[in-house]
Length: 149
Image (cartoon, helix red, strand yellow):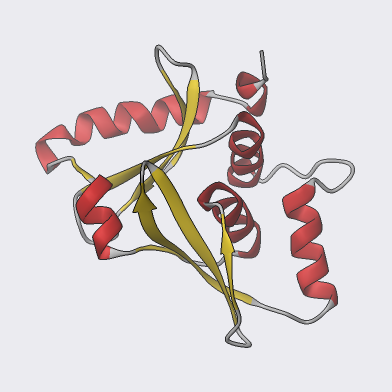
């Protein structure tokens, strides 16, 4: 769904939405990763590649395809993810980095049932207006909103 800043902590979060369901998964992330995700969602290309752009370029250069990202676990308040490549190789990653890379490569993002059961927030259809307000908020923010203090 996008990135927002949680108040009053000023901590950025990325919000993922369950396909075919009513659960949302909020993952707290750092300001740099929030900016990287927002750039990718807005289709912004920096004059020089940022880390996630570089990683995408390296994958292309070596002929490796990222086929999916999995949000696999939540332990002690920390989310875990895996990058899954066409070769069958799986690499552990922070969810924020994995999401930023998935957005750049067009790879799907999956959350395990266990993670969604533990941390997913159900927002029934009658609360869809609130979700629409959140979408409008996301349309109005820019990466500069995530500058460090």
